[in-house]
Image 1 (tube, rainbow, N blue to C red):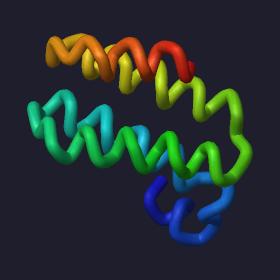
Image 2 (cartoon, rainbow, N blue to C red):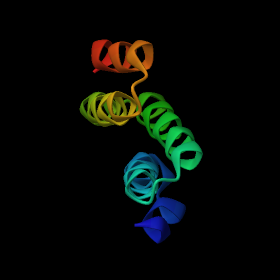
Image 3 (cartoon, helix red, strand yellow):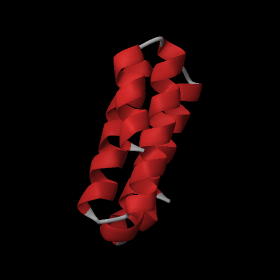
Length: 80
């Protein structure tokens, strides 16, 4: 997917960032996960993939819920 993101940034970049965020979350790399979730939502918004932006916000909300960060959780759920 990374190669696809490099060759077609418009279509695949946000998907690659989202997968990287989920992988970082699974590996307990909190800081990397935060950065990738933000990149995923920003990329989806920039490229007008509304449904993928919503998915990225939803998954970010679950991530922040696991961390106990209530404000971030609510913000991302509202944006989703």
